Image 1: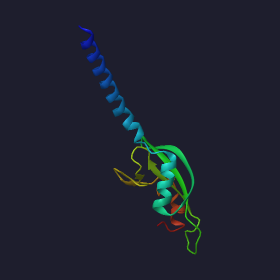
Image 2: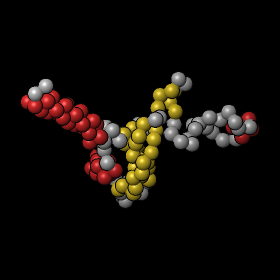
Image 3: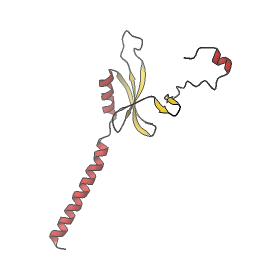
Image 4: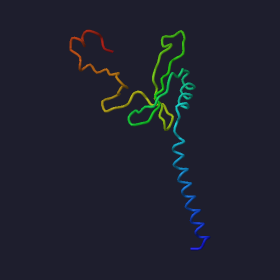
Length: 127
């Protein structure tokens, strides 16, 4: 091979490597930062963000955002909630998930009364 051909081959290899690097780094740039998640939630829902931390829901990387409703003359003033934001897309992750037997509530919120004694179940109304 002559020097011109070698130079062209090297240039083609470098261009291919550069293009592959741009494609790979394009995926990394698409991730939402914690500050972007905070800004998005504050603008969309008129809440105060108290904190943002990393988390995982169903194998999905998320930002767990703790929010508080503003003060006011209504029953839910100062109510604190947690929202999940997908770190790849920036979409809000729903709290309820469809399962084979219906909805699954997040965390410890379960309406299953099977572990209670029968007299305890009858002692108060369940809604």
